[in-house]
Image (cartoon, rainbow, N blue to C red):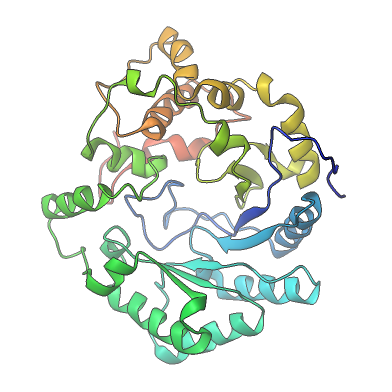
Length: 344
């Protein structure tokens, strides 16, 4: 079903860049993960659903939609990943704009060469390798370097993206550091503002940064991020996530097509108790209600996303707004805890 075409400005931008998150599973449990992925998650999207979503994303936007594949760690099920890419190519859905990985699987050059070559043949435009001190707590940096070297050879330098290249070139494994040393490295690296203070990043990295009072965010509305960025992710459970705002739900594909959900959001966005208030007022739009229920804000926050996560976590703990705050496990202490940390 094609989206309505009109010359008038629309308050909700068409989704023209979308990530299909094959899974919340990941071999790592990074402090920077805004989606709280980790080895304890077992959700995987079926290839048939991924193809349906890919088709609907392309059809719903008058400008088309560039689709990328992410997670979690999509290479955790290689057969599923290559099967999706091959099927999408056969159906003429267009190439995946990029495929994201931590390169945890890159233990052998021949395996890397075969997999990168297979994705190239299936139409992949770009391979994205995540590397930073958080990933290197779990994944030896030499694996990322091997994957990058082979991908550059097979695909060419312009089809390889590394986040972040400074760490790939000059970084090291942080697994060998003791907890205090590692925390110091994380805190210094986060100063570059590369991290999104949602999910585990809000819990573990946000408090390590310069803290600003809630009053600093009084005029920080979120309509750009929620309604006008043109960027969404779709989780393995079918929830549509605005850009990188983990834990916020714009709709579920169990309730209709992607086009249906976009039109519903355009029609009722202002009436939604979470998305509507965040779009109009930013996280302070949720603050008064949360405080009336017993929420006590911290003395300061690293940014408005850090504040927003704190408020949303409280509201989720009260079992409120389940249609807009989820999945519920993402807000739980087990998802947010550092590796080895006990949950009371």
